[in-house]
Image 1 (cartoon, rainbow, N blue to C red):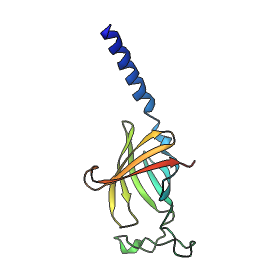
Image 2: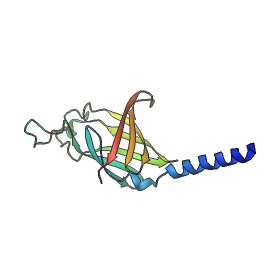
Image 3: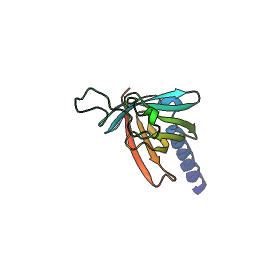
Length: 144
């Protein structure tokens, strides 16, 4: 009896974990959180994202896009923040997106990035320096 219950429990757990793994390309699309809208796209066998909108993207007139003024590369400081590819190199591995790079327009630094789809329209990402424990998480909702 105990073996039967354990077998059923094990089967249910394995089905639940299988059901949670979504196809790698499910991440492609437009996502939003409180402060940002991004568009994730596939580049070869990796995923990247461009910045569509952020709270601090425009000058006081609300129309003119700010420039990438904090970029450590002086030659890139005149480029617009709008449409800037700021997430690169995400690799889908074992149901998660790992080894990505996040360029922060706020401080000009590049951080490590990982993420996971928690549902077809829900994405969680974490940007960090060094170890994921020391970082910042974002919860995203699919726009389209």
